[in-house]
Length: 304
Ligand code: DON
Image 1 (cartoon, rainbow, N blue to C red):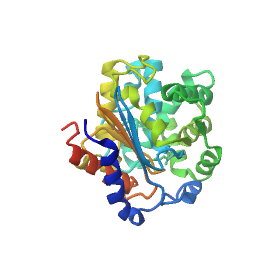
Image 2 (cartoon, protein in one colour):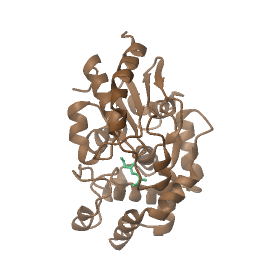
Image 3 (cartoon, rainbow, N blue to C red):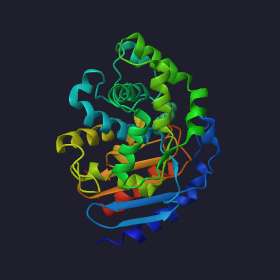
């Protein structure tokens, strides 16, 4: 087996030189306070050890990475019927773009752009007894720890400034693609995005997507076919208008968040999570993309 600890250390040392090139997200005021110098990487081998460097045990705002977990929960609850309300095509546009939603009559292109994730939040609200608590317990159970929490300051910060998400939710409502009240759906969505986790916890949480649906506790969470579909969506839609670039440079299914996190995985092999809050122009972690590219190029471990 390759010396993964030393591979991660080499990548960490070489990528760090670019730390000042990224920009921390400021459109959610609470996120603007994060120190750009954080950088962590955690690799979890399926059926094997974990390796970490830098701030891989520091919790951060997982933001859009949570959309994968919300999608998994929605599929667990209501199965394939969700695809009547959301498409599975890449958008080629930024995560908060609204034009396509109007043109396509309120059917979001995919579950990872904001409008799609808001429909998923609506499905969870309709099908969970106590949505925020039940979703938190779902994530804690996948991860195998009890101390994962929402950051209410981040959720409130986004509530006060999330005008585009209000616009998306109202547009969805006008097309009858939202069952619940706009306020309730967005309250859930903002909390979901505010979840705080470490690179190490994220690698453990995403284990089931690299392990044919079996989570770390060896419990079957989704079928192999459902996992295949989520991974396909991460590959084609996980980076919005940079999904092609991520496939081209890294070659793995992955999901980014504006908190600076990225989770990527190679089915039946590993889950690799990075956190570096400096973002590139498309809103994805600059160091994270660099580190992942170096990892798959150096180790030749990618789906291609
Ligand atoms: O809705 C938003 O704008 C944020 N809560 C999440 C955006 C995000 O993380 C996009 N991903 N890179």
